[in-house]
Length: 81
Image (cartoon, rainbow, N blue to C red; front, side):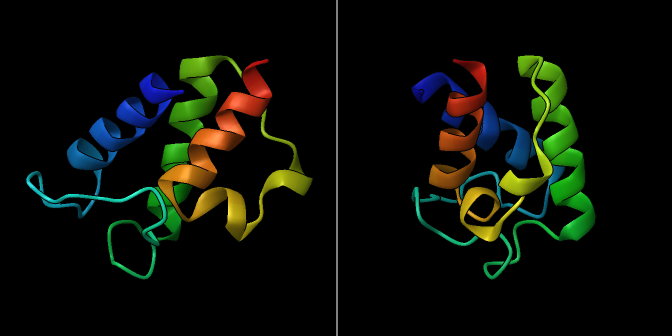
């Protein structure tokens, strides 16, 4: 699970508005803090789908799963089991 979180953080640092030196907690809102916008979120989901060979069901595309490191990490973890 820690590897998934690290992968997400590294992706955000390289492909979003996130400051490379910023400290992001597991529950920080990615959208409200301005780290990612709707297009960036779609690109992140596409990246995670390809990296982990998963398909994210429509019913799992909810804010609780998409707007924080914790939510995204849990989502990927559930789908890779």
